[in-house]
Length: 183
Image (cartoon, rainbow, N blue to C red):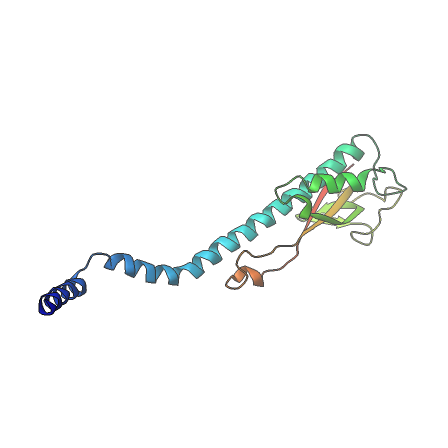
């Protein structure tokens, strides 16, 4: 009986070693382990970029809310002498309407008179400082300067896979500035 059992065991063992079924699955499992880190990095960096775009949207929503509450009702300049008293709360509430939610913070709100200049703005004051109470002289084009509101929003990004993610080396908190002409 022992000899019979041993010969059956030897045949099973030989069949096992020569069998190719499942070899592709085993090779795929080995390769998948090597590909997991780059795939996780792509996902994490993709989420970082998406959150940065959402933060841009949050800033833009905030300045649009300021325009709707202050400029349309004639309360510009909005940050001078409490012309638009509910501005700070409205900016925060508007910035937090994106998918980032209450993790978005409005870090600063400034206003200045600026003139369009070479694809950007040339501000008359100290640059993102307090706005003057009276409109300064005309721009170099002869047009009057516009009253611009600048809103800086911030969001702290936490990588999903901090141990293996290249996203943990990216700038955080993410800070973006949005601006809009009020008048």
